[in-house]
Image (cartoon, rainbow, N blue to C red):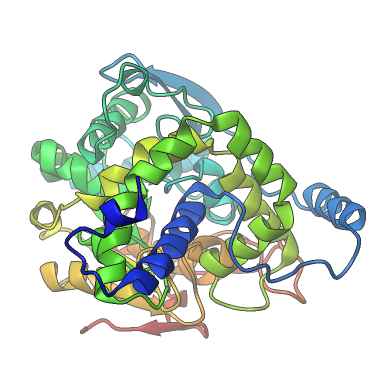
Length: 427
């Protein structure tokens, strides 16, 4: 597409704006794709070979993403194989919980279902998974075309990905991994949207089984207005929104070339990951590298398939399905992918929800501030009765420099008021 044809309707005097928008469009696509371009934050200070060795050392040093549970698979409506894992409770805990929950008309222990975000996998919940093992029964699953789940068969046939389809995928996982008993649903970013889509299409499931919901760094709509932290004029942003899906589609058709480019520019990629995933400067390098590995594992054609669905996502009405149950909303004040204003909009739709905006937190807040996020989830589990109020949420590692990520630390429900978060219960 020529520069002139793209500029139609924008005006003849904005060629400079269009050039800026073109660069911005490329940057946004790169952020979404996890590809490598943009501003090199940590470039050329040491030899490339040494940087490669450093990345390998970081990969070997951390055990992030190594936690595994009982494996299972189920089929989506289009026969796509969806992979999930279950962390079961010890036998004694199951008996105790079952006896307590019988008073709540529940014969089975509650299950917490974790839904990950775009370009991630179930392993993004590493710290929370470590903390909650032995405390609750939990299901972790990989969204279609992500992690260990298969590529979407409908997409292979040319059908676009929809958020509604992801909601039906979640229903298939619940039917297979938690067919009975109470549920607590936890979703980050795209995972939160997936939960909203589930509620929209299966309101009876929410009414009959869902005890509570946690929405982490997510949005109920309006993502087409996000600027990704780029200082764009209105005309430039409009142009980006118009051309970016086509740019991603073109990149998706050149998978081998783009993936080769990713590998060749890994240093730029690392800088972009740090900028758009985290809000603080002192993130443990091993955690930043873990985030990089998660994102770079998502092929560019998958990125291209999913991106358009976010631009038309609107589930504000579906939020009312959660009006009568405890809801925890968590946002990062430096999140440039789903800014805190989107969490505030969810709070406006659900006045009884508890909103917490974490200070110095980016989009991957569950990795950046694991103790606080896990503490907030522990609060929710206690409020729903999924765990006893005095239950100690297990050890979970720190992600800031000066602490060893993965080192056990005591966390209890009620940690929402700790440093690093600003609670806004009345916002």
